[in-house]
Length: 122
Image 1 (spheres, rainbow, N blue to C red):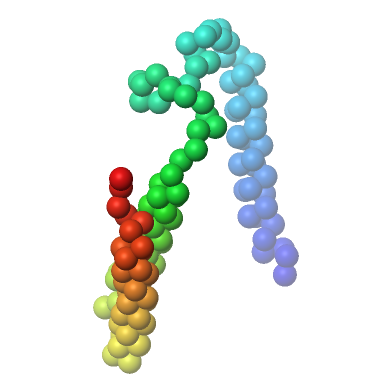
Image 2 (cartoon, rainbow, N blue to C red):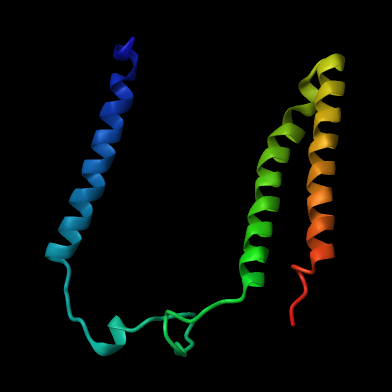
């Protein structure tokens, strides 16, 4: 049974070796002239202000989690939408009602977040 996985292991091994060899070769053969400007933090051309240990508001993290939540929603809905019309009638109705329940659950969560004020910036 494991014989069918041997090509996959070979490809993974070759890929990992290729990546490691390329990184090592670029560090050995490439020029290395570190300077203060090259070693400084670069963020869209803006000089960094403060330290890396500054605290962020909890609202920042709430928006990030909501973004991930709705991003995952699209990840699930896009394949469903692509394959929806290829289903027979019974599976199509079951699939449609399942997605409606999925969207309603997300909508309830979204309404909860709005009521809590997580999307309001002060």
